Length: 347
Ligand code: UDP
Ligand code: MG
Image 1 (tube, rainbow, N blue to C red):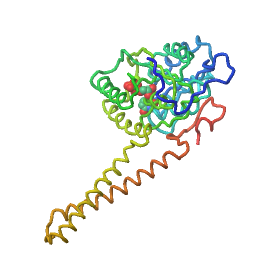
Image 2 (image 1 turned 135 degrees about the vertical axis):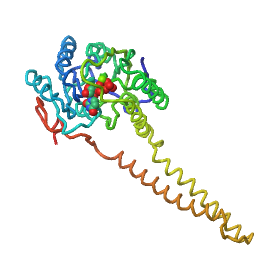
Image 3 (image 1 turned 180 degrees about the horizontal axis):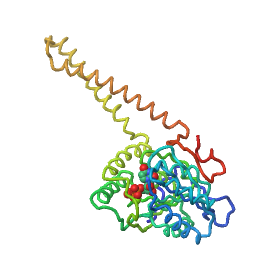
Image 4 (image 1 turned 30 degrees about the horizontal axis):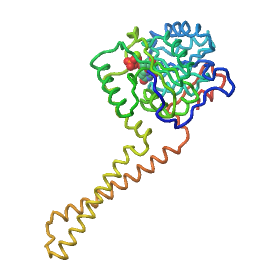
């Protein structure tokens, strides 16, 4: 499916002026998060190289070890020792899939980043068609697992509901946010912050920035080795993240503003009840002992002031958020096959 950009927040310029095909892809950086995937690593490397070689472009495979405890690290080392195109980043501990992907994206050196799962549920053979699509003039091609091979009740059903809610609220008609297999031009990808479980919102965030997006049908397979790291709770986290994304997309609708709004309402009630109280006392000469308006007024004043100050803090936080520089959300222990360790995020 082809989406016209809603509005170009940032005009996208791809390629240098005068290029024959400005959308031509130079090279590929494949980014793979790895957490306890010992049984998949050798096959992953074999399938990836088999899929990437015929594309005929220079490539690198960045494998990010997200604190594995099953010996994955040694298996990765063994591959990197024989192939310089395989680059490794080792996290100090488990930071989660999004952080691992972000670290790989930050360290990528080619002009297109491909994100893919390490358990081979995505089929590396789909990368070729995605790159071909990208070269037709897209900034992002994201996969749609039409025949997703995961548990129905705990994974597919909740994620279908989440996809529906999210595509409705963000007005971006996407079928499958959870598909990790994506091909994205690095110049636009590096502009967005990724944290929490946000990797799935990449198409929406980039589309908002004027990226030309294309949704492509991709294959999906059952896990051959190892176990999934997620259960039904995953979808809840995703829906929570939606609040943040909504906040990023529309600054004016961020959730902290709710407090300010409630505070304002409460403040309004406080002022009204005070006026009523004064009128009752001065004009009506009413006895104020145990008067319900008095209680309402006191409570509204307190609640109003507290909520207004919370709203103010929210406002300040939002402003700070929007002015802070690039943040990293992971710590790197060491890297392999990177010429410049600092550029790969070693602190
Ligand atoms: N993963 C990771 N850190 C985590 C959890 C998962 O790097 O904390 C990786 C995992 O090794 C795999 C990918 O993220 O390469 C997707 O994980 P999984 O297959 O468990 O998710 P599912 O396919 O069940 O959604
Ligand atoms: Mg998987």
